[in-house]
Image (cartoon, rainbow, N blue to C red; front, side, top):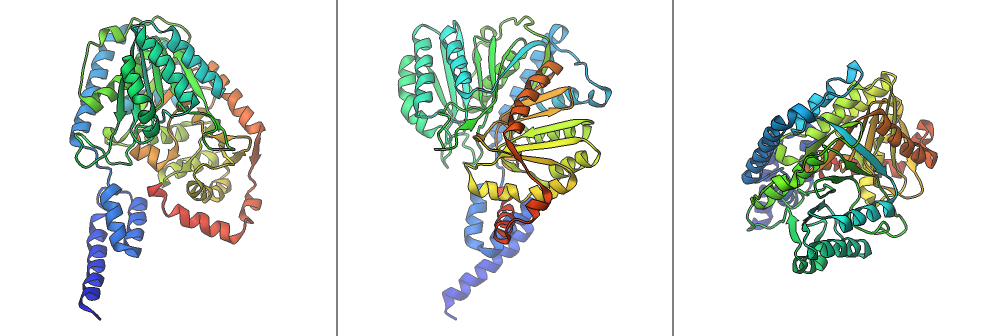
Length: 472
């Protein structure tokens, strides 16, 4: 055998043995198996891939800035505690949930909010634009995708108009998800006086640079510190995937909890830029506008824990009657699967609503590999037919509604900056139930026996795709 061939073969085995020791450190067994399989099959390509995005390496500066932001949030809430913080009325078996969310994400429960759920894609954009047009002091927008299309143009025009009449406008958009939109609208917005910040820029030599697949996936807006938006909808045309228009859900919120949305926006700006300014005008006194108790749960690698997943799992173990989960991507890890199966086997009515259509075929292959085992445990799986269901929300019994940007997958739980909006209010749960019932009425329920009879090539492809769950 030629000398170079022998050397290359030896290097491959050296990579395998070294990585066999290194990869499992501070990593789940499932993730370790995924990476080791890739490295053992393709040692050099696997090593390069692992070096690029095998570890959730968050720059130390970002972690420290997240800690500072969290400390500021906690101090601010201590000052406001007397008249804002409340303990929502919940059944005794759910009484621990609000405190858990506070410990995981820093925000206490604020009373006196009004929550309007908007399932209409065009309608939510229209409401946002109308609120920007009516703004008098500031507009803050944070989104994963700000597209170079007609929807992006409409929002950009509203922001430019607001800035020209003296409204302080700030746009924070993920540097990768909004690349085309930042290229198209960045310069015109800045010329109009809008502050435009690309979030989580990538590059080996950028200050405070992040791993390229750590993304800011949040979708938030605050107008004048009094109106907030939170949900799953990006600033993009609904039919950006031809033939499969997106179905979304957005909450328009007024009341004290808007201050929490504002805090997440400003914390992300601080983490990205390190810049501070006078916060007082951005946090006006917010009187009660409704009867809903609510709190925000931000999550992301800067927290150094998978806090959204911990909270979702706690909800599954706490539920007694009914859980409905709506998600476009369902690639869970074993702790989440165990909680889901446990809830169904305890007699909780558990329904999972996912899209029949896919905008990421490989991810859908992996997703479908889970259906058999959760159907066998008693979970009801529904495939939504009319559009691509991109909404992300969850309801628990008659007491808790949750929506936001978080998918049920390892990427959302471990890699992305996400946010969940939690409402402890029967009226909001009723609103969410109405949306869920519309989905269910237009969904195809899966039958376990029929699912087990799917062709062998499909099963093999799905199970192979599942091996990459930690990479999706």
